[in-house]
Length: 420
Image (cartoon, rainbow, N blue to C red; front, side):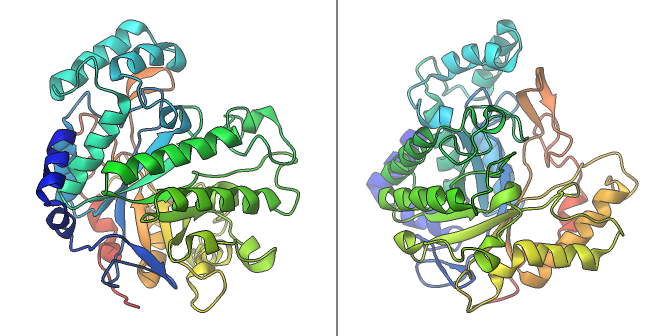
């Protein structure tokens, strides 16, 4: 597939492919809006696709081909994918898929024979993968297949060590060179490697994958114990360094930045030090937030949607207010629910109440979004091979909607209802 993409490039056919989604690239930001090269508004309607775990490739290829999954995503009306990756992957682009799966056995705590069996299934569905295909080739094939269907990609650095995310003891939460180091939260988050990994992915995307239109600097930054007690100075320092580096390496991509407390708190922009210095990537910055029914920053003790929506606005949503130093586009880059087993079209009472409230908030603000997640299963998760994802949009075998009622639950989030 990558070879076909390069042929398109030689023939000068990439522009029509990009225009298939009605988007003229590159994108930029202005006030609270994401705009295309013709200054027309673009609204991200995205789905997350995990690629950050021990196998070091996007999930699901043991069940379906890259083309099948890309077709399904495009046909549902999504115009982008938030594709996650690890710094382990970013700094090891020449690792072959076969070698990665062999190594993943020990890393994920499963047998070598189980991983070998998964690899055999992957090749059966994707025969272009051979013993010399690298994990980076697979990322490229996914991005190119999506782009050929008019679907853009946001590259999201999810973790440093390839593994499931997130908690306060997984070693991926906060920079190891920041104030208040503790091994629980930072033993794998090596600042120098993180910067090098971002630069490597930006350089690679710039060289041959224009479907990558944005890069998120780090998923769910979270301080623990003494970390973050220095006025969030480390957040300002390292986020600025990373944004400057990504933009210098790949000036076309948007730079997406999340706050602290696992991308749920940007209040320091308004109430603390003030606006992050984004002058190094002017016209490219985008904020992100996460919100789930269990998110501690947005408690719902009284089952009051008004209260929860006020919390969304107070902690993050205020960046959409125009004319402020911190004004910028905001993408809800993770939200989701358990898809089956509840009395409300498959949703539990708690998830149904949460989703209805969140959808109302998003519709009122017409903000960008990325739902968690497309994957119906994982190669390995929690020491379980071919583990099911009950929050996945797709069934276990990645064939179709796990809950066909879910897309309708998003209401007018699918539509663009506001303009600059």
